[in-house]
Image (tube, rainbow, N blue to C red; front, side, top):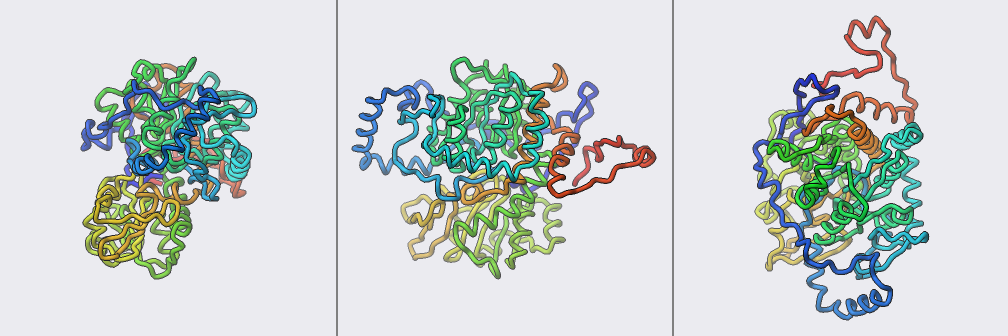
Length: 552
């Protein structure tokens, strides 16, 4: 779910050599490529601590014992690691559910998963998760999610015999939770091999990762990774013995970035990239403009089934859920400012207004601003209302939307959270100063206390709140998951020359097919065009029914 201040629609350029939507123009031309890719990767020549599957049991016990002795002296360092920004995308929010909101994803011990020797019941060791013994609970979570994901399950059933992803070797870097697990197991049913890591250090459901590892799938993720852990996990998915990946499914661009920078020869063997986040898509456009993108990529984020459903309808429900679970706040009469009136902002505003909040909107785009006015919201500058509001929500995809200056002016008890793509929207680093006191009151809930006693309530350290503090509806995730699966199938099976080294929009026919997979759930019956009507409208009776420039 990523919130963009502007919901941009890209007109396809005409290209007679392709049979689907053509490459789209770069929306981020104002952003310098060096700004996008400024990151320090971990020194790969440095020896890692210990790899979980290659440790002698006796050595492992001794190592863990020594580590427990060192706990007191290293605890401050470990805590500081927890607070470090973790990646390019910082907190990808473009898919799926939360970390375990049931309370089962606890850090039950203080030993890093990388320092454990773990095996599945079948002896499988090519994974690194928090605790493999949680697999039974995780399997139940996956089975529950399957009941609410009719589209992706229908796709699994329809395409299972054809195996359209046979010989596909997919590196996945997304949120790892029950809904993603349904997608992963669908891809495997369709013939793919996968290796998977997390795109967010807080959104992994440990028990679901354990269930996937128990089933024999290489999973490298746990809740609360450090930044070093984060990049190590992606590296384990990209670079493995007897493994040459040929597809990437990314959320935030981190797997694409690591493979391009660290394994350029391997990257050239990739047949296609599927990216579903605003930030990741912008990075692909930057690569394409700099002529560094050597493989075709599919922009799933701007497909209708992603933007209108995952961003709008999902956020409309999950913003309330995450605020309730983390703060127990009463919404009636509260003053809320929502930064950004893209699809995410629209959904959040609808939900908050429906519960009786007084809602203000900040916008940079006159079209989105006018939409907010017509929907009954006051469009203001943040400084005009910051002293009076009770809740601040960011949903722009930008950086430093809420600054230290703003937070200094907030009233006591103001709740601050982010629904946008990355943790850069709220300038959290400016709060890590000696004059302010941090007090953790719940998982993902911090009180930041000023010298005069004023405190603000910061959720998920500025990372996306709905993936860190609550859950997303499985049904809407089914729509996005089916879209991702179809994009992978399309790129993997496309004849040579159909897609060049550029960024493509998902063909509208696929969007319509994804929607059709979910209509039976509502017992919905579509009207069919007569031959005469189809001729009059200039349409094929089977679709697509709208031109590429149509705005739903």
